[in-house]
Length: 101
Image 1 (cartoon, rainbow, N blue to C red):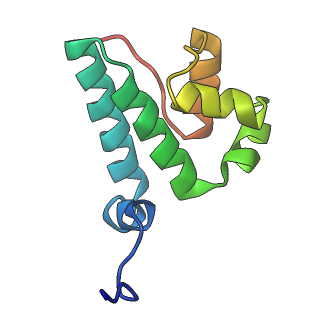
Image 2 (tube, rainbow, N blue to C red):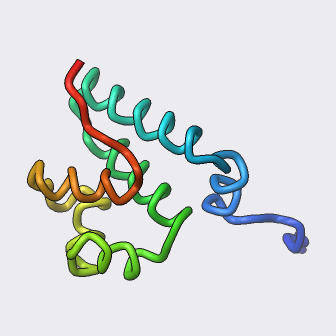
Image 3 (cartoon, helix red, strand yellow):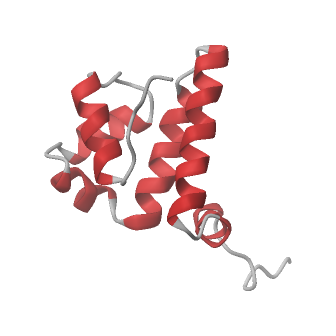
């Protein structure tokens, strides 16, 4: 039988690699650029989920941006596309901005 006591979860590994605000912002920016290139929002939604979980619980973050926990999960799982105002609130709480360049 394999012994996994020295292993860590993907999310723990993510937090170790993306351990600064700057790295997290670069990661989100890259994921958004990928969406602009291929039109698949799922990569960006997953990146939002990872960044949110690196800072807070989904429940705690949902409260901060005035969403239900299920509403936030529906967004990050790609089941519901957020309004631009909702996306702006999420990004603002993460310390990011959405800009057109």
